[in-house]
Length: 364
Ligand code: IPM
Ligand code: MN
Image (cartoon, rainbow, N blue to C red; front, side):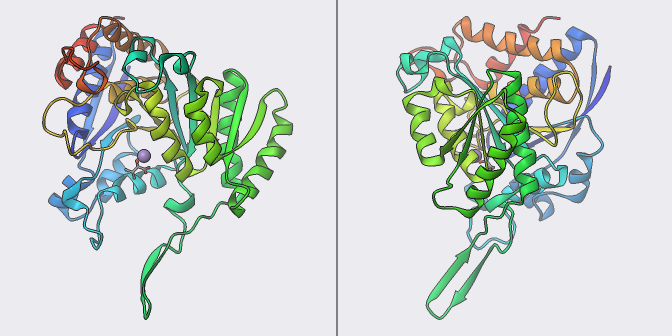
């Protein structure tokens, strides 16, 4: 089949890891007889430098004319001036909103080959296999007012957390449906002891829970969730949360999988159904890692597994997705490690070498 893919590498290690993701996508094309037409676009800091804005309208519109969007990462110290009027992060925030991808799916699975690479004890990690569903187009990230004012007493800043019942219900539904297709347990995360948004969230979750009576619903306060993720992570099946909580909890949860570098994500505008095609935005959960950018040592597995998620949800290519996941597993089983997942003192491979090894392991 023929597919059109938007490739938006961005800044820092974004281009390095995305190159490897694309390499693997092309290997899938050769192995399974598909043709991928790639449309590249500038996003983030590089777009600010070249065009004065983080996301050109034509790049934004490109995302509506393709079958899937592969995103790298945006941002970096060069564009971090707090007084700047344009910010690299605007690119990803505008894209998520424009594409309407309110459901960010972040699977966190401990690969048995990497249990020793985590900073946590292997016995704590045993059996960890969860999916975090993060609301992606609302809450503190987007709601107005969002501003800074100078007052006689000095500066004041405001961000707004606002959620409508409809926004809460549609993201909770993604959580319930995913839980139903997995182990049937859903942890709904909130801060209902303090926040009004969370009290509404909990109310909607409880109501929906009656419709999904086959799913075991629990309400977990976000601070307690952060603790339990480290204390007893294997208890979680599906976690669902609002935008900011989900951002923080997934960085934390990534440490269970040894490194942020290995985790992919899919951002969708509806409940994902394996084999059914839905437009999505795919990106590793890590950032631009300015400290290691340009050194060729970043881990490309987060981008490569994002390609697998794209194959599964946006391209309807289930076998192909599994072949990518198998290839990653095989290369890790053989002992190849980028620096972030290597045990101290052992030999490491570069970003490109890791991409080449996984590419070579793809078979139809
Ligand atoms: C992520 C990132 C983004 C976010 C940043 C780059 C805006 O941290 O995808 O988790 O906060 O959503
Ligand atoms: Mn984040």
